Length: 298
Image 1 (cartoon, rainbow, N blue to C red):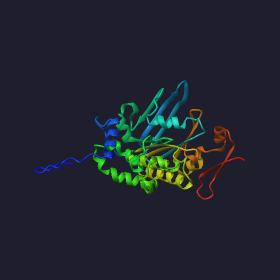
Image 2 (cartoon, rainbow, N blue to C red):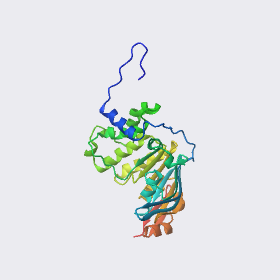
Image 3 (tube, rainbow, N blue to C red):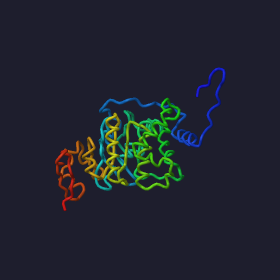
Image 4 (cartoon, rainbow, N blue to C red):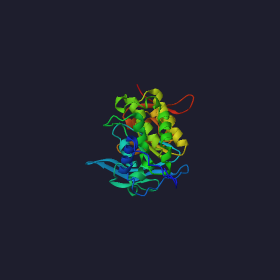
């Protein structure tokens, strides 16, 4: 708060919450010069993989990946277990290094951004959310605001936290301990933290895995809303029906490579999916919407 000339006001006492966010901001590089992200025109590439190869130990998990996440779109990563979906998401987040090729975020090589600059540009939801301390739900969500500390947008923290809790339908237990929540409730709180971060690139790894039918649909509607607002959303999904209904594009991964990419109506073809999943399937058009319905042959 800026003091007056005659009667300077004492600084606000630090609360436990502000201290936690301050420490987290410091870990993100709060003392370095921060470049705030600007608005992106629809179709702008916010994350790109070019000739990407990723190795984990001695195994090459991704080989020659070319993929772009664009502002205003939902991109679904689908494929069988072990195909490389989560690895690709982590590489696009700059959380895994490339053995060859390049990842670019917001038009620059990922390695050129500081940790804080990355946190302002991309928000990552991992498969599992675990915390060692009994934080309250609202405190967990508030952690998503740490990258904005010391910027003009810091004053939006409380509004952003409240909006994220409401969007994920987690506001009803905002005062409860995160460690006391069910698996589905934890998943919704983790999503709320990502939403509160308000980064223009959302990278979500199996966000529907622990959720019931209602909240699976809720998560994908949120993805569509964020894309409509100009963000780029990349989401790993196992449910091909959800991918077909909500994604603008889908990339089908198989053995560390992209077997097909494009609109779900074009790439969800029974021959391709049967081969990739090693399970005979048939693809039918929904009688009302025309969206592909993928059904196992039984």
